[in-house]
Image (cartoon, rainbow, N blue to C red; front, side, top):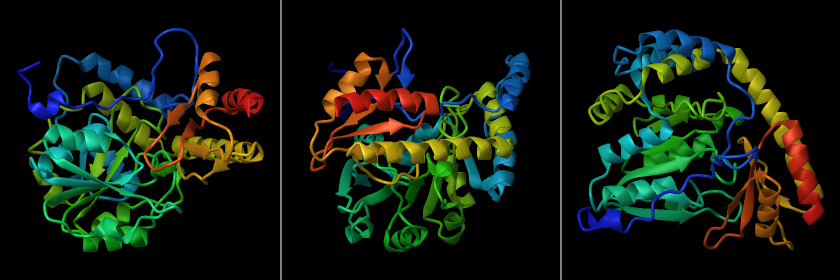
Length: 347
């Protein structure tokens, strides 16, 4: 194809986790919530469906009000997107020019690198230390560095960087740092309060994981109003549709449902980690709704393939300079039991 930009023609493109279109699978590969969302979500979408002849609110006012109350921030500190991936795209388009530099940890979310490539920018991947802490070089200033992505908790490891370290990074860096908190509701802390302490710190969230709304596509960013004002110029006019705004607003308004759901998933996560450890896997304690495991002796790709043959999907991942591993999403207790029974037969 000769019509597209050179960097697009050479781009491999981001490949999402497998989404089977036929038959029945136990899906433990894309970190979806195994439980249905709050019943209030369905009710809100049904009401909104009666008004689809009108354009949606371009700035998702109802959601920003509800999220502001839930998170103790002013609504003017929030911008909404078509999933948090849309938020990442808006940030990249806003801060990064062709030839500029984006920094990200490795291993982490591969889409960060893809967004840099689409923009015609460079990406710099900084390896985690062996204990999954960040090296001091992650905060070093560098010419052309315009944006830093830091998933916290990280994927695929489920590990976290402390609030104190993140605040120190922001003070050291010459550019904004995005704390991607896609999995933070399953963790012990979050970084919303840090946004108020340093204008360079921004926090993105998604409703795909903890709120059980992966199919709805809704995410948001918390940043200081001076940042939000500029980002609003870049987003699509109506980047969130009326149904997603209604559903997301109902979801974030039902904090009791969230607490109950998170409690169940964290309990199953602890059980999954314990069972994997008993089978000889090396398991990193997770702060997310998935578990990353490697094995000191057995190859894990045949385990992934065996599970898939038996209609259970997990995520096999292999990174340069890192041991191959399996990322297993936390499903229901029954789903995890079925998965572990098969794994036990292969180890």
